[in-house]
Length: 112
Ligand SMILES: Nc1ncnc2c1ncn2[C@@H]1O[C@H](COP(=O)(O)OP(=O)(O)OP(=O)(O)O)[C@@H](O)[C@H]1O
Ligand SMILES: [Mg+2]
Figure 1 (cartoon, rainbow, N blue to C red):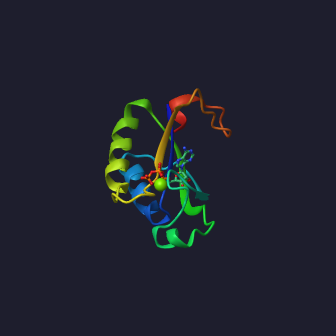
Figure 2: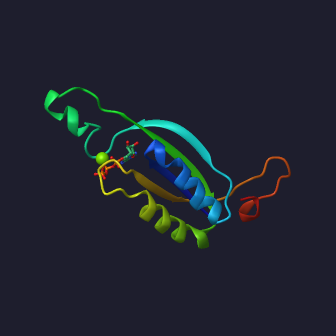
Figure 3: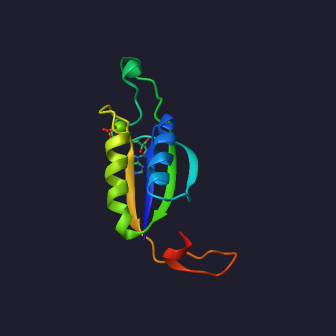
């Protein structure tokens, strides 16, 4: 299993939900986030003012998917979330050792 942590623009949440639903995943955790990347959060229009605005609003969507589905989902997310402008975000991918459905004690892929 792979954990995808998708950090992107808040207005892109619906696109992420649609891509996950299309791939038959409904489980996700969505968090309002503040962050910065390469540009250290400086907005183009404020650049000359040199204001210390260094965190911009983002959303973080955490979802765990099966290994065999991860690459297709990642490709689709990258293509549909890219505007070509800085600040589009990132997808962090990591291995998940196990998942436990608390209600039943089931473990692994069948819980997703
Ligand atoms: N190395 C990182 N670790 C953790 N979170 C990060 C990292 N880089 C970016 N983020 C998160 O992703 C958000 C969007 O980052 P952003 O798209 O600006 O990355 P970037 O590397 O600057 O790419 P770009 O040049 O396209 O803007 C940030 O606001 C932050 O929340
Ligand atoms: Mg950036």
